[in-house]
View 1 (cartoon, rainbow, N blue to C red):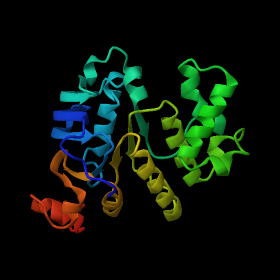
View 2: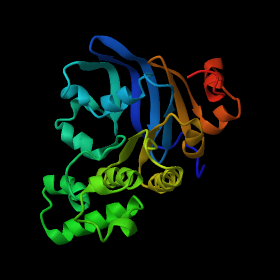
View 3: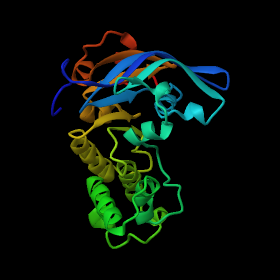
View 4: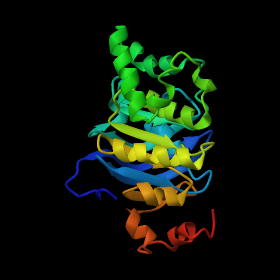
Length: 259
């Protein structure tokens, strides 16, 4: 790791006893941890353990989905996310990268320029600067600078995934949440994206949801294990992979004995 989170690092996200219900089912219960500034916080666990539901909760998807609700407290920058007057103001500060596909029938340029345009940026020269900067931060500019007018959906899978990162960066978020970015991405591109995240960590906090425990080992300062809708353990990633675990289920999962 470049650095380990220190007790003096400001807390960016505070999660306290959060429970999430979806269609009448409890999908998360008792979730409690903090995410610090300039930290990559890994979330691992098997399918249907509540990882994506957690990201959706932080992103306030419950506002738009009546089947979803949560209790407990989530504070971002010290403020309860329920008390943000404008949910879009919160979302501007927390970028989210879900797995492929890109989805929007837009050109490469339009994908990255969309959010700034909605925020009121209209001058082409300003948009050009934003688009180039975000594509460069996502390690994509050199590959697409001559294809900005092509549909994003025509890019390769790895390029599309990096385009989703560039799109998330276009609002200058303070935190970036990624959900299984390695799905449908080749190993070489996966490593390139991992390098991107290491650089972005210098500017923001990152929450990384991954099914690849070795990816968490390579990237995360701290890691939480989700099992059956609960957080089994949170610890320094190096400690967990060195066998310094508090719960045997953590060791079993890291050793591939279930999940």
